[in-house]
Length: 41
Image (tube, rainbow, N blue to C red; front, side):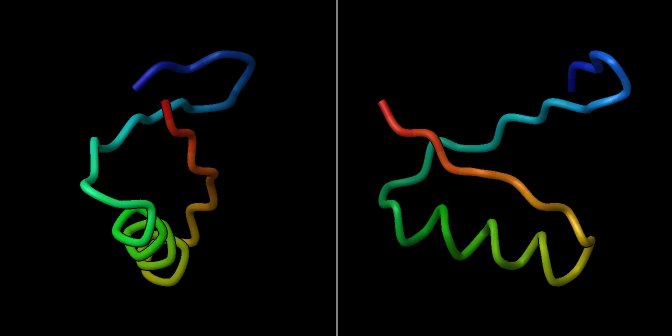
């Protein structure tokens, strides 16, 4: 985890599909109130 200007950057993955990444993102939002975005290469 990196912290810059009071913000935390956390990288998770890689995941085998975008759907799997979206599922994890939704679970984090629901359980920990952590929002984020998905980046693919």
